[in-house]
Structure formats: structure tokens, C-alpha cells
Image 1 (cartoon, one colour):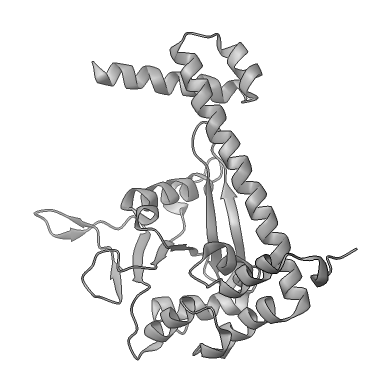
Image 2 (cartoon, rainbow, N blue to C red; image 1 turned 60 degrees about the vertical axis):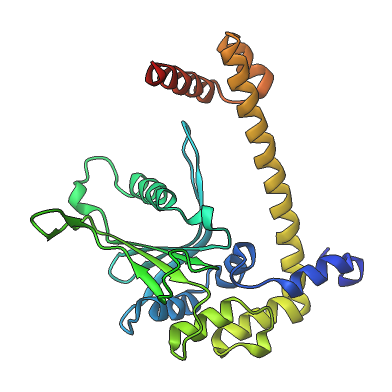
Length: 274
């Protein structure tokens, strides 16, 4: 049986109405599986009209058994095999260059199959849409250019990094798009393509029910992440107290391989300290 709107907490419905596309949990719902809308988004962000999206996934998790996993907001592939990772970040600390580096590493490590050449790595675009002007210079966007010093030659590793200024409001396609990302009201949006999907999830019964389910699941997931962080912190404390790794795995419910990796990490930190 589906959830009745009459049984949903009114505060939940208010929360849905306040959501914006700059909120990652809402943005990923709106773009989930929608190749046409994702293509529309990427064409504006990259100022291209020849980009055709072949597949799109949202909240795609890239797992790392021995370290931190990542969950990508939008992961798309175009008709030429190029990959696109689009992230929205309201907090500046979530958009640091080292976060970009980690996303690239996780994407690349899951792309090549055994025996494939490194030259087979596809072209990658990592695009961070930040609510604030991350670099504070007033530009609509910041494209990272990697160069070799002295020789002044491009360092082309196939990874293109772009920071989009979510506070930009110019009278151009990007400015209008950023306006739409930062307003909760579909009726105030410039692009009907986006407003139509936002309106569905906020005003139609099926969309609102789906949003309530996702928000509840998102809360459960955050709770699980919190338990995981607590388990890791407890495991590190026990490792410092020389508790056997088998006991730690049992008491924290962490995989033995992960406990061993934490032990190795702590040992390396101790070596570095000296």
C-alpha cells in the first residue's frame, strides 16, 4: 500500500516545499534517471549544444573497503563515453580541492578494468556547484587549468574541474540556471524544463509521496553513517589500547579487513610523527 498524504507529518510537507535544487537530496531526486534533463543541465554548465547524455545515475556510491567511500550526486556518461560528476555543495568545506581530488581518484579507480591501459581512462568532468562564490572573485565559474611550470605546457590528465558560482545571477543561461537552483518556487524559475520536474515533486501527490519516502530513507542513511563513524572511532581507541583486532571487529561489527586497515593507518601516523 502506498503512503497516504493524510498520514504524512505536515512538517515533512513543509520541508519538501522549502527544498531547492542546491540541496543535494532534492537535486538528485529531480535529475534521477532523467537523461534529457541532465543533458539540458550539462549543456548550460559547459556552454555546449553538441552534448548527448547516454546514461545518468544519482547518489551513485563508489565503495572503498580500506577507506572512505563517496556518494556522487549526479554521474552521467555522454555518447562519446565521457564521464560527468556533478556535485552541489552548500557548505564551502564540502567543495575543497582535496574533495575534488578524492572524487577523481574514486571514479578513476572504478573505471579501468584489468589489463586496460591507463590511456583508456575516459575524459572526466568534475563540476561543483557551490551555493557561495567559493573563490570570492565574482566570476560565474572557475575552470581549473593544470600546467607544467617553466615549460608553460598543459598537463592534460583528462580531468576537467569546474567550480560554478551558485550566487551568480547574470542575465545569461548560467545566471538564470543558478537562480533556478536557489529558489524553492517552481513558478519563479526561468526554465520550464526544470520547473516542471520540481513542480511534480512538490505539488503532485505521487511526487510528494516519493519525496517523503526519500527524505525518511536519507535520515535513516545519515543515522547509519553516524553509527559507522562511532564504530570507527571506538575501533581506533581500542587499537591504541592494544586490543586484539579480532575482538575489535567483533565488538564494533566492523569487517576484520577494515580494522586491519585502521591499524595500519595508525601505525603509519606514528611513524610519520617520529
